[in-house]
Image (cartoon, rainbow, N blue to C red; front, side, top):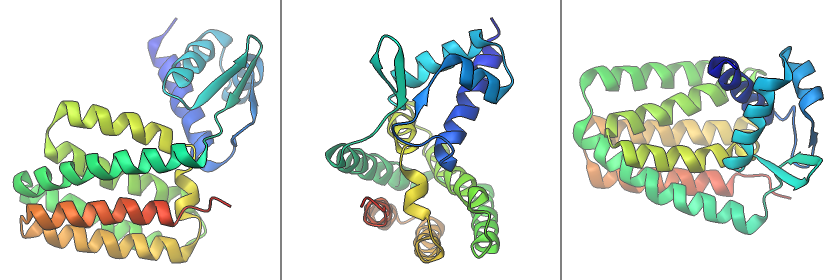
Length: 209
């Protein structure tokens, strides 16, 4: 079995969850998912196992697998953990960030501003992920990156809901601008504070009801 096919199946299924094509509580079967992805069932079976292990899918019984439904308490815990981890990453990145990194952040930010008023919010979600991952990469702490990646994967279950309207997106853009300024000044303390506020704001913007 090709590892690349399994990875592709996993990534595309994650994208379905992010875009809301697969919603919390939806039943998942190897056959249906394989047909949707246009693949054989072997790589899909492996992808399902991996998605269960990272908490995006949940095995209810021997024959029933569903998109995981998070409790409010779990959502709060995930955001609390992300707040701490990403604040640390932002502080470290502020110390180490290079001009080329700042230019890339500016370019991502400009593109997010450009599409903020469009109806294709999926592009904004992707750019937002790239923006945060670039900060994590600049921090250059593999263990920290692994921890953040773990909780961010669970965030796929509700991430799109935090940016579900233009008002929320505009607020997110404003917070990104403040972060970029802190990075340009190499202000570690300010970058940490702003990132913590940004993640906390993301929780408050969730449409949980």
